[in-house]
Length: 195
Image (tube, rainbow, N blue to C red):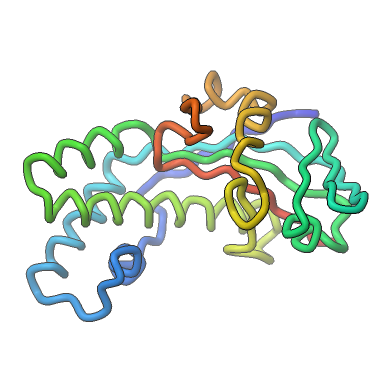
């Protein structure tokens, strides 16, 4: 199976202010918060290096197990998510380590900006994943994806998934001992391929 790289210019990503504010549960921001959010989104897009690696795999379901070409996952939720699909894409996407570095710097020096900048970086990686979703499904699904760590799909599957996709060498993504991805603004997910 071939691993394929995917990148876009961060300036082409559509990142709405409401998306960044939603991660902070802010529904009616004051003018100062709004201005800072706009600044943070623009800065997050400037420092982002969106890149992903993905692979296409056959899908076979046996009871609670989903069998891909290169690994198996046990999860009733994933079985339901992939019901009716015979193939899927599995990907790892990131916007790079600079986002983490700046979030940490701002949290220490300007906590309010740090919190908003962190939410803006989350909005940027989610926008990138939406773009990848659309690309992989020929424009059919923008947000329909399922990730290790959601529902009953164990986060422990990250290790095998990242190893198979060679994510460290290809896009600079590693795992902590607790199976959390570094850079933190990274997503791994599974997308069913429409017929």
